[in-house]
Length: 349
Image 1 (cartoon, one colour):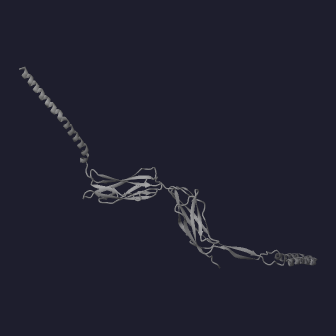
Image 2 (cartoon, one colour):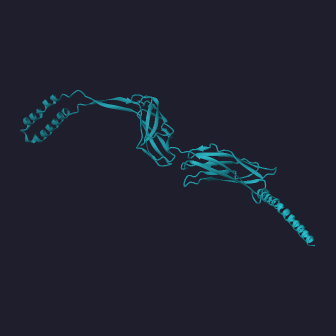
Image 3 (cartoon, one colour):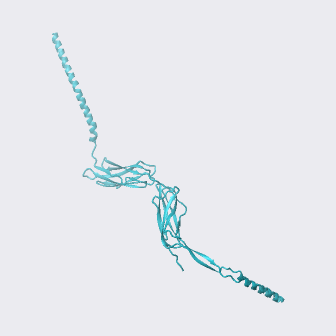
């Protein structure tokens, strides 16, 4: 009987051990399945929550892709729907980095479109825009609820340039044609570029053709130009039509003859002076005779003058080449400018 009880107890222990062994063997499979489920949920959950955008936005590279301060660049945008239905889209743009002064500005035109559409983007810089690479972000938003947004990013380089200035003829030579001996004027404008500031001395570097007694030109004092400003200078042109008057010497008067006649009134006065009643009349007569005889002897010997021309600007059309130079010998970036003047002979009467 004891043996029977022992056998039953051993049989029950073996059965219990088999159950525990089976449970232990199934745990790794359960854990793996649970881990796989969690991975699938984490990876695929965002995709299930997303919807396909109903439009697309693309931007072409700006043209030109690099500009100097003060330059402008443009880009063509494309807005299209992803289905057969049209979509209303609103567009905007922003430029970074933002500078303390001179940050480029951007604008989309038109700002509201219906797909398909090809709006344009314009980027404008100023003379004070610092040199660097700017990022332009274009944002497009549809009219759905909730709205869908698309962005396009492009870059524009603003390159560093040297501060400089230019010359332009703002008022041509006036009058354009003169007679020799007359003058004319013209107005030249000096314009600051890239923040240039300084004193510019204007001059005529050449006058063609080169002739004797040719015209001359001059400017006033140096022109002071402020940063990003303009200033004008007046060109003065002078031609030659001068004449010289020289005196000629006339034949001398016979002064000795008049001198010999001077004693005669005195003799007459002595001879007739015995009559006191006639004395005043004789005195007056002597004074009158003295004056008549004395004046010719004191007359000016230069009785005539002759006039001759000494230098007249020849008939021609003259070209004046204008340049500038500042205190650092910096010449205008756009080179020299030129004006012309026609000179004709003075009229003779």
